[in-house]
Image: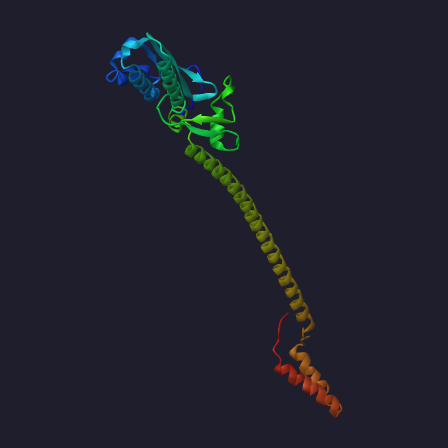
Length: 275
């Protein structure tokens, strides 16, 4: 809903509807000017009833005019203005009519001029309240007279005509907080994703380093095995050489012959390994 702005130049609200309600009950008012918004029907009706009771006859009325005017700094209040003149003046009747008129004026200031709803006293000093912020925003440029410490509001018309409600303001505030929460959540989530990505990168790097270390260890292991093979390598002789060695040392001393014989037997048992 597009919100309107408060304005003091709004025309009288549905005055013909008010007359249609009052005429069946007070047909004599048709000859007089009553130009008042429909929401003040109850206040005007009460005033006319008082006049009939005080004067006993509408024939005593020489002049009657009932209008309204906007109330200063209050967008929902229209104050009654009553002009009345009697044919035969008397102090008692004049005082009674004065009282009835003042009572009607006071009543009009407690009612919304549009819907006749009871007005609610609303403080405007807490500008951090989203509901109050929306109300103050309706004053607009050129209507700063409405920026007061308090205001009488019509809850129904504030919502229907201006699109502002306390419940709606709370919803807007909740929506803003939720949006802010979502943004923060997304931001945190983004950081988490980055951390996760960094974690994956670190893991990949760690795996790569582990693989490199493993390969290095394997290379070292291969080198060690190669060294072990080299250190355990056996020098092999041809069979003819071994036989010739045995024949050459047949006439040698017993100890020398035994060593050669032992070497030959050992050769016969060994498993040859090609390096």
